[in-house]
Length: 252
Image (tube, rainbow, N blue to C red; front, side, top):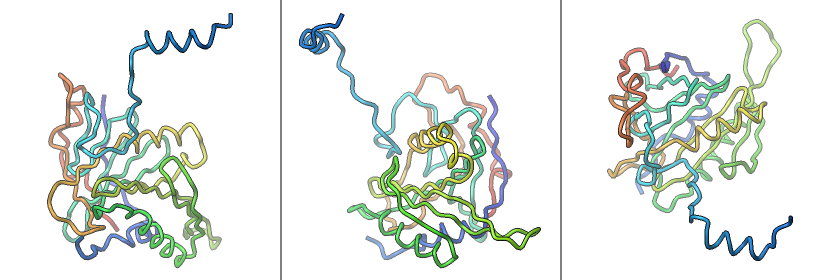
């Protein structure tokens, strides 16, 4: 099963807005109900509900072959295309771009203080940045808590009319990290695709590391040298050895 790692160009307006906060801060028959209940209690095996992600590496489910990008690990879903963002000057890998069913999912992980709550602060600054660029914004309660939904103006070379690109900004606070996902495309219009995209985000694993990092400092990524595999055999070995050159997309 082949996976595609490709080169892509980020949208300038969206990139400027979504990166507005990443400057490092200072560090810190009708059955009888009673009988049915008794039978369930005595005969049914005890099961625990599946935990909801995204996951810290310490809590990640076992038995999954994931593509290991260092600070982020993702499941190799069929039909998923992945490219990697790099800083222009340093060439540090800072984020993932996942394309799935005409939907773009941009993933970045950031260091956060122990007290948590970074997404609330980031969301406010992000909203102010988007508003300054004539975007319309609103907060909504979604699958991952409070989200920011925006319509960002996009200029067209062939028309003077202004169009708007809908975007969904998701933030998840973890233990000393925050994962941000920016979703655009078909998932904002199709409920079935939206649910698939949410499952992709939930299956993401964050690897912060134990070293000191300033709040909002990006958790650096690396090219996958091997897939993290807790099963006996890695069924995605063809994904594990990707040449780094064509997988890096410059941030413009």
